[in-house]
Length: 322
Ligand code: UDP
Ligand code: MG
Image (cartoon, rainbow, N blue to C red):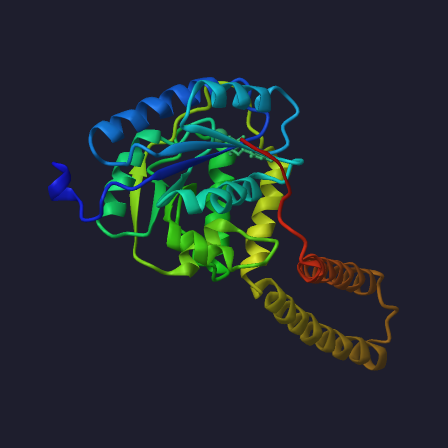
């Protein structure tokens, strides 16, 4: 396809944001691949010569920042943003987007390990130039995932959709967003921003590109099970109040059950003349206790969220910008 056929908008200044947390083993290789890709896209007239890469150091404890500084010195189209400590993947991405949106027309976010196929960016740019403002990268299959990750992910998507959150299946945070969309996103001031849930809420013309996810080539995952679970709870509780409603429904059933049980107790008191076994006392005690604790926990989760939001603290602090 020639440029004139496929596109309506002029070649944009593209900014690629890469969150990096302890990624010293991976940065150099990633930069090589992406620089090559940028050059090809510039040659093809798909993006402007001023396009650039931003590495966001999310409080790494290894040589990540030094590597970024070196890359910056060696190349004009590499920039670095160093957060003052580890703020987590979502905040690192936002720091990158919000700090560089004014210098670019559109921003693509992608994990620094390039597990998500970087070559899909060309298609993203094509779709952007056809007038789409958000382009979601969607994984075709989960072949490269471990058994555990695959099924927890499937469970998560099922659950979050059942709870009424509009999220795109098998899309993580590999996406293109136009400058205008990022400006809109910036208006969402909540501290607990779950990007996968918020982008579909923004509206605007959007499209998807499909790709195969690769395995990590070096370094290790920064998302152990506990972090993944926290992320899933975060995603659900920032977008859905259904868990609170479920508590009400469970509460109602337990209440009805206890009324029936009271009937049974009164009946046996009068007519069965029997000493009641411990089971009829112990079971409801455990059961109702469990339901109550779970419910308090869920309510606490939301309460904690409100607590964090009312403080209105910044999402991240920046240490250096190069
Ligand atoms: N990351 C980050 N801050 C964190 C954890 C991870 O910026 O606190 C980055 C990490 O460097 C990588 C991306 O987020 O670029 C995704 O992490 P990873 O590849 O470890 O996750 P996985 O692909 O295993 O889900
Ligand atoms: Mg990864």
